[in-house]
Image 1 (cartoon, rainbow, N blue to C red):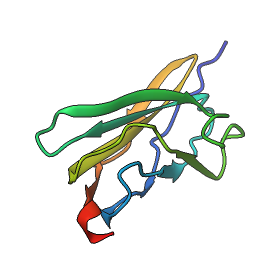
Image 2: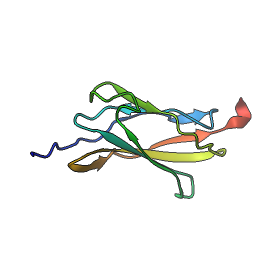
Image 3: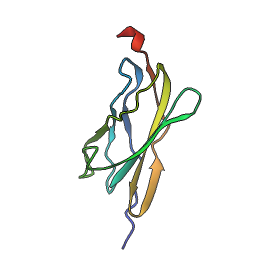
Image 4: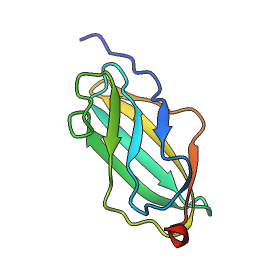
Length: 109
């Protein structure tokens, strides 16, 4: 079986300041990906989310369009950085380029 090389996911959102402490993470699908790993760090670089999802579960099982997931993890008011890694049976692809930053500020709701 010939490996299916994976590209990098392009992050879309969240970014900037948001008021939702359970945000939806959105990125562009990666061709040949069957799973995606979401990694989120807080402002102290401590990991707060490390979760893998099937491509079907994030609504991009055909390898096109936008993927989206809303983890149940409730985030504190803080600044976060997140990345996505595409995966398949041939292995793990590269992490998305520079992480995307966002700040949760529920006081402005």
